[in-house]
Image (cartoon, rainbow, N blue to C red; front, side, top):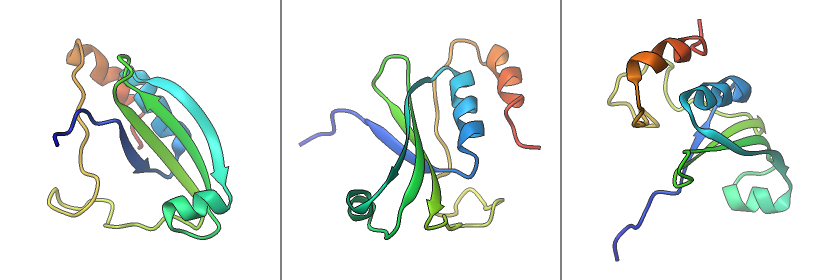
Length: 114
């Protein structure tokens, strides 16, 4: 068996609107938004009382998706301190190929936290 493709990466965020706007500015497309909750969701993620806002963005070719999640309940926990070193466990990077990096960087800076 070999892996055929990567379909989905999940990312828990605090400000789902800001993170979604950042990835849309980068050129990803909004596939959908929803609030998920209930026993089926609890069972799926292994938590009780889940209420979660969800936004799915995809690459323009439709092959890659980022699932952005904002948990209201239970509250998200911090796996590491905000300025953790690069070797800390957890989500550290995601890379995209773009047409013109010099053009897109200033646009992305408008979405960076202060």
